Image 1: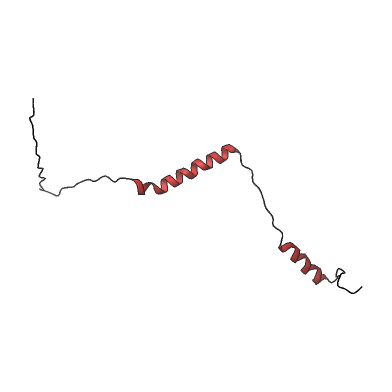
Image 2: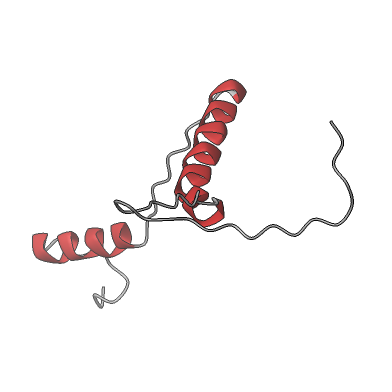
Length: 84
């Protein structure tokens, strides 16, 4: 034989060939979840996202504070009449 078509018995060459064939292999693992688990995870994900973006959509209350002896003036214009 000329050596081109034969399988080498050299341990280094066999290890190299084995590594070359193993390099292209892909191992995939599939995990099947029950429908109820998927729904629970989806609800939790929506809750986390709603909590994360809640400050962007909230309206903050404005509380006016007056210092000591401060006066608050209110100007009211009323047109019409008030009955008892």
